[in-house]
Length: 273
Image (tube, rainbow, N blue to C red; front, top):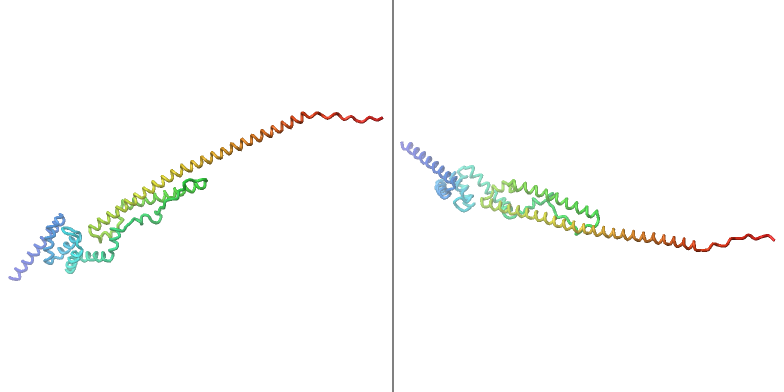
């Protein structure tokens, strides 16, 4: 009879623990973190591995408390020791954090968008002269500007696709981060995106401005050269006309002189005596 009563007591306690765990999970889902943590703490202290796992997660995510990875590890270790597979997975994530912590630092502080500006999307500004003097120079400058614009359009297309996908930070790295780290990483990446976009717009405006100035200066130089050539042509034409006039005058003068010279007397043949 005593054994039966003890068994009934254990069943009753197990049922109560299950009910408490379910209630604690309900409170956690409802984001009533204070009450949830109090219940999980009591159950975890009593040795419940599921409660220990949840308590570790609350310390990880900073729910009802500040983020505390050391506390999270302690509860995960207790839960894992009782055979909880979820706790073992969480410990593996913590171990990855320790081995790959530099990646978290990179995405939260050091990422600079260089990957988006490398390779075929590296678009250095073209050299635009103040003005071009020959058709060959004009052609070369136009080709340089067109090539840069094509590169810049490719960069913007890839940039917009990357931003819209929202998947630039590797999922595995995000999985190692605490919520505050995830926020810092995303805020940092968004700031880098904003800087890249602003720089791209500034580059477009810079090239547009330089191209306009180049066009104006080149057109002015072309007009000046055309005017010089036209003036030279006019001068050459004037000189040619003047030369022709002089030649005609000379011919008329020679003809006039020839007419003014008296004719020689007729030659009389000698007579025979």
